[in-house]
Length: 116
Image (cartoon, rainbow, N blue to C red):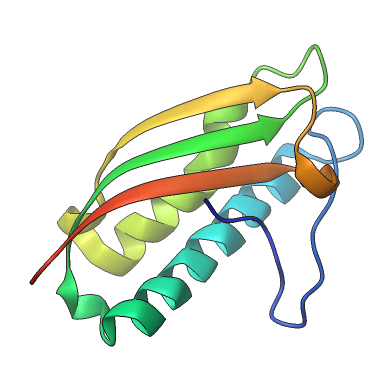
């Protein structure tokens, strides 16, 4: 999984519905997707080796009454669709949780099919 870390190493923190807006959560999820692409490029040498993004699982640090976890993870899903087109369309789960490591708002893991 990946967490929302900026290029200068800063971790985004917050809880959706408490001290973070939906839009801020979506931006955090998009940052995670960007970081995942960076990791894939580093490991594969080229994003063209990605055959398909198969599945995303998102965990959203949520206040008790926050119910838009799926909308938060849309930030990552939409980013993968923009980068990979049809190869970025995937299955997905989004879960609300009362806390995440380091106080981060979102954590996302991906299963990606790659070429040999």
